[in-house]
Image: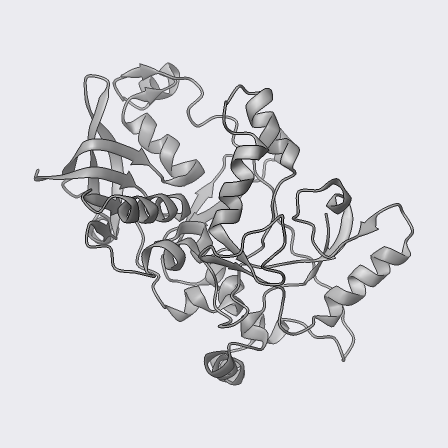
Length: 366
């Protein structure tokens, strides 16, 4: 078992790691930083950067997603829920549906007032959200950012199905309002009809993700991003985290069990493997519920029953509709073969426009 030293190690190379590690590398060039990612690089790969590919990513044979299968139960009619998470540098931001959504400001205030997390209220969080983005429809909008690396835009071409959906919703007269921005944190934007905005650069037509916004956009001589490296556990000296163990996941997928590799952190270990990955790493490290650890033969280091519990998510239902002949949809992109979509791909490459610069239906009700 070999061992190498860094100042800071990130266990997981998803969105949070890209933002934090990239900014930290800029802020202190003397730090030696390592990001370990179980998946692969996503830099400039067409199936990551072309927004129109988002749906086919779910069905792709490429190992860019991890699928977590639940046990099911009475609440789900004994059906197992399957949750996909990103498995590439940039994590979910590199493969997701590109939907730009913000919570109500009161949700952040609840973090602070209800849950007792001082400094996590809307006054502190909203400026950080704005710092990360460039709101391209109106860069001077007071509720949005104007110079961040993450680009936010509306679709360059209209989606008549989405527009019709919104017009029908507005005609219902059911006390829902209408707004041009459901993400401005104001009360008027709640429960309103609006066009959906996306994590897409309106100039280039590219997906705007954490990997390209914070890692791939510049050279960081003090930052190493190591892919195909799945973190198994945190190494502790007493109760102090001093490193991690990981395996070469390429070899692991091909041959089964492999010898773990250890790497040491002189200053900090950061768990950044997402809602599924980080709790699993903690439990394999001996931090978690006694009954879970004992059941799996893990020696307990810290009694922390909340690890891995109370996960909440939203489920997606894909509903099919009959559409008129003049409907503009993403059907050709989703269902067509490569020969059929090549013209659209060429248009995106040359102009950054067309269906490949779009995503799914643009009309939503919040």
